[in-house]
Structures are given as C-alpha cells and as structure tokens.
Length: 115
Length: 114
Image (cartoon, rainbow over all chains, first blue to last red; front, side, top):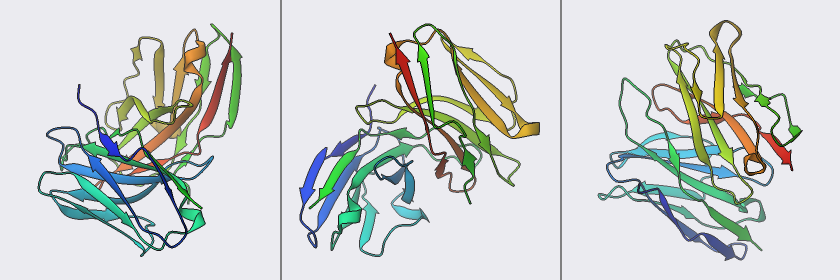
C-alpha cells in the first residue's frame, strides 16, 4: 500500500538559511499534519491542513510557514534557521471525517541539521 | 499541561518475556481516540493500534493486546513473547475533536535482549 512520502530525507543547512520540506500524503487522504521531534523528545504538533485550508496551529514559530496544494501535497517552509530547529520533521496524513477520527499515518520524516 | 503520561522511561526484557507499557491520559472530551505508535531506531513512526473512547472492548492483535480503562483513564499496551525486533520507543497518543492533532506521551524505550 502507498505510504506518505517526504522529501528530502536528510537536509543540512547553515544558520539563517531557508529550508523547504515536502510531504505527499497517501492517495485519497485530504488532511496533512506536520510534527517536529527534537532529539530524545516526543513529536510536537506544528500545523495541519484540510482541503488546502489551515485547520489547526500548534507551537509553530513565525519563521515557519506551510501550505497545502491542490494535489493535497504540503510544504513546510522554514526561514532564518536556528540551531534549535535541528530535528526530525514528520508529516502525517489521514482522511477527515467530522464524526470520526481517522488514523494518522506518518511519513519517514526529514532529518534537518542546522550548523 | 501534558495530556498523556507514560511513567515508564525505559524497560529492558529478555526475549520471549511479555512487556506491558502504561499510558494515562487526560481529557474533558467525551469522544476521543487513543493510539500507540512505535519508533524503531531507524526513526519512522509506525502506527500499531487505536481505540475509540466509545468502545471499551479490549482486543488482541497477534502479539499485541491492549487494556483500555475509561474509569482510570488508562490505555495500556502489551507485547506478548517479545522479540529483538520489538526494541523501539513506544509512544501513546491522544486525539480530540475537532482538529484531531495528536498529543504524544514522552515515550517508553523498550529494549529486548536476545
């Protein structure tokens, strides 16, 4: 079965640079979630999209922005990178149903290292 | 405030032993969802099981079983006859309406020794 695709898998950037992470959800999934996982920590919710509209926002820095496109893929844009942004970034997708929570399936993650 | 608490930081067992992971959650919603995810050393997050708040039936799926107790807000997970490949970090997660974002516990590192 098709899974969530994330690219790139690894990314090395310098401080103050920008980075763009991409996420391709499972086919027919209309909802995308972004999570950040620091070393030795649990994943923290950043932002989510349903049908190309932002549906929820967590503790996402103002330096980060994201969007979902017409083909349902999503991109997380990170500017003015800081050392503390080094983390594993996960994208998850699901089908949204107002009456029922569908399971979120995660991509393999993008490991970002900021030097 | 942490909505999901996994009191066990690390568990180490010998192969074929059973492993039970504890999870306590906090929510005011009457409808909510609970999940267990596995994160092996390779880093990906793998969905294992889910439980809806309106269904308290406990089930077994292969070597996995879970015990959902609404009265104590607990959602414990058991791996029967553990194997070395079960070595991973296990996360319990809570999801609430309407946006359904996941709130994770701190994770429990399970090490299964041959």
